[in-house]
Length: 96
Image 1 (cartoon, rainbow, N blue to C red):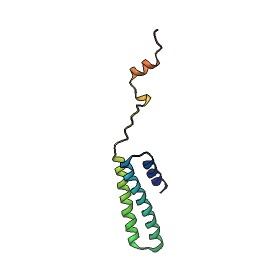
Image 2: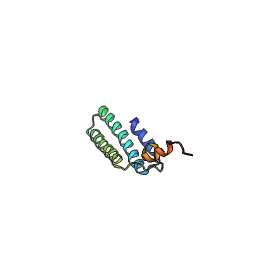
Image 3: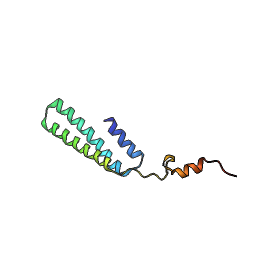
Image 4: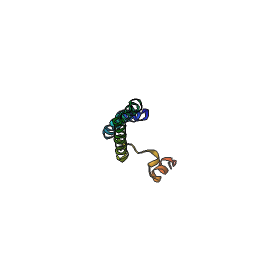
């Protein structure tokens, strides 16, 4: 439950709307599944077991959507992604 809440918080913090729209319901489904699972153990009602399974399946679907999303596009190119010619030009001493 803690990791689902952490993922939802990171999605909100990083301002990725598609991930946020999938992570928050996923976290709520995990919490709901835990509550219904505990309720099933306490009261032994079959409907709680059914709801636990449905909420777990919904959470798996939410996290599958997150995995299917394309990665975030950054405006900055990391140093290691620069071409070898650019790295040689930066590290070579000037001829003057």
